[in-house]
Image (cartoon, rainbow, N blue to C red; front, side):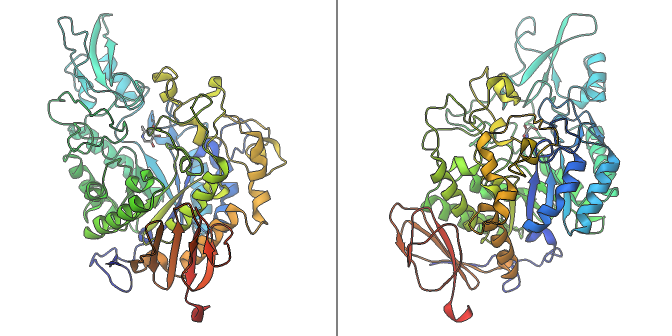
Length: 563
Ligand code: NOJ
């Protein structure tokens, strides 16, 4: 049994001035605006829809919401392609709608975090249009990564980098005189040109964009591709190992991920944000292979939080999870940052399906009708409930993705014609991509589009059997996944688990067991029931078998005397 001091009231491991800040313990709920709630009935969710539904999130008990991108965008990558960083996309509403959303959220005690996309813009951004019209070597081109091609006629890309969505990471342009010209870098879709972050004008522009939204009262930002902005000098070729993951790369020296120069940018951002009142927070979306490396993004003078992707990617395996949790608490703790925990988001197969996948399914490939086997739905849900029951007992801050509180599975049977993820198109239909986790969520079982939109329109079709998962069906059912989430969040808060003291407990190889303060958490990742240690059951992710814990089930216990 080992002891880990992870900060907090009993054993602060940090003398940082932000030791009491809200984000150290927050449960942050990710809203995917196009799929949350559609007030105007066009089938795409919007800001007024979100504002109307905020009371449901207050009832759930979250501390903050993070909105995936709402800025002006042609939506080639669902808003992660921004054409104007200082306005709201008309599909989602107006900037006044955002002000109303923030005001209402604050009334309900919920903070609001926006998504900022600094690695690349849309190809419709004024700067990129200007760059296309300007000459090679001009100041307008220097805001992006334009290069001459290789080969005799410059008709080969400047290097061999591949886009995360498939295909080459370079596209050749036609110059103003009509001749084939330079190439520009896009680590994602061709409609998402990468900025050149060595250019001071780019840095100034983003400081100004941060000020623009902070002045409007938002509580922070989730930083998209926070490990990608700096590229290695000279843009050298890269030969990834065969099993490399397209989002993160498992290697230390990927010339476009995790380059050290990016940290200087965040130091500037942190200094700017620290000049504001109200504990504004910045969270890094940095896909890095280890917690040790991720922790570099949350050193005292950098970002406040970073997503714990090693935890999200961990399989349902007690040994791997033990090691991942230990390492997360150690690595984040060593730099005085809170550990964070996350199981689902808009880029990964929903954990109610993912945890039952028993075949190779690389990150970003998704699952669909042609996938060799379907994850067992009941098993996936059982594991998802157990996994969340573990996650919400861990010290630190946790992220939830809309719909996971309803136990939504991945939507597998989307028709090809409905798919919109650029991954699907860039891979020629070889990878399904991420649409299956982005389907509009069900609110009312008997309403059009299950209450998502008043007209029944929905930008991706909703599976018919989601009526059984609608929020109104689950609200009154004490055994529903929604009720479990509400109980978990309430108990987590009441028991101060986010600031608790963490100790592993040894209950055998199949048990993931730990104490957080007075609460003992046990999850059974084996196949046979496990005898439970003594104690009163605070909550359980599924039915118990007397004093035995069935497989794929988790429980919180407390000493009898406290009950
Ligand atoms: C990460 C975002 O979460 C994902 O949805 C997006 O496609 C890429 N970054 C590119 O911005």
